[in-house]
Amino acid sequence: QVQLVESGGGLVQAGGSLRLSCAASGLTFGRYSLGWFRQAPGKEREFVARVSYTGGATYYADAVKGRFTISKDNAKNTVFLQMNSLKPEDTAVYYCAAPRTRWDVPGTNFNAYDYWGQGTQVTVSS
Image (spheres, rainbow, N blue to C red):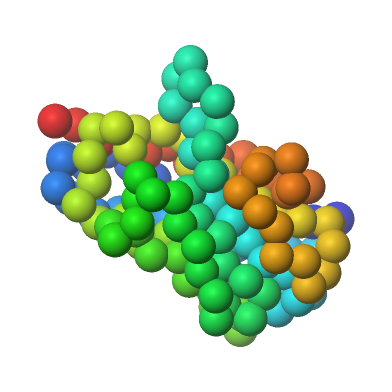
């Protein structure tokens, strides 16, 4: 049974930083790419960032490029999202996600991901 558990969300002022973590279990972590998505109230879930199964390749949404960094620690079965220079528009529930298939490097559509965490709230005040 695959489980993804996010942590690290909170309230921060604009310009501040947060580091999200997602601990995974039930899968051979080093064989899976992982992604971060977010969903603001009244909006659709949107792609934020993705890291390949090796951790060597990353991809970001334009809205966060240059401010967010995704990384993967295969020894700790954890994926991170370092968020700097936060803006009020970054306010959302953040989710980590994994595809069903090993070695797959999924795209930016949330339908490409099969396993989801429960989410962690990030609120950025102006």
